[in-house]
Length: 214
Image (cartoon, rainbow, N blue to C red):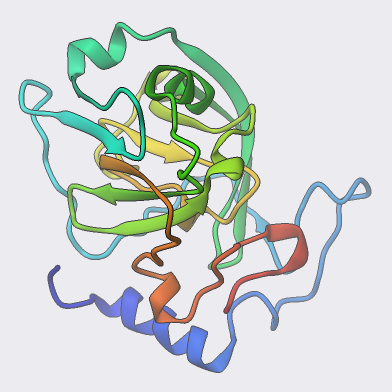
């Protein structure tokens, strides 16, 4: 992976100092829809590691394997041939902003689980992106109803800036757990920490617990 950009270095410093959301006044919107330490935005800020891979759809592949009975390597056409799933959810970035009511379309992770048939040893999942970014989650978290591999946002193809052609959406976790430009999904018996997790960020990333740092 390339040298970290300025934002990456800043976020590493926040993790060491355990900063970011804690310094902002906790704000609830009556029903506690907004997690502590977050503020609402109407736009959709772009955050990455300083490199946005450009992936022609003719060359795009998604490999899913590890401890599964039926590994696959989907082309773009094969991915779109899967049952399509739509969901509206909120988006919470660890840098303290949230955006409500995002309409996503793609392939649900529950469908992926049904196709892959995880073996009994499979307890964790590692996501790898076309920019070599990685992040990890327990299998049970990915098996939630609102987790998906999204190719569209608010009715339009997901842009390169926001992780297109396909990114992972995990609404109940901070957004770094949703890998942009996803390339590989590995079912594993071991919890292998990803890019931000080894740099001091939480392994569980629960927004409503202000769970930003490990």
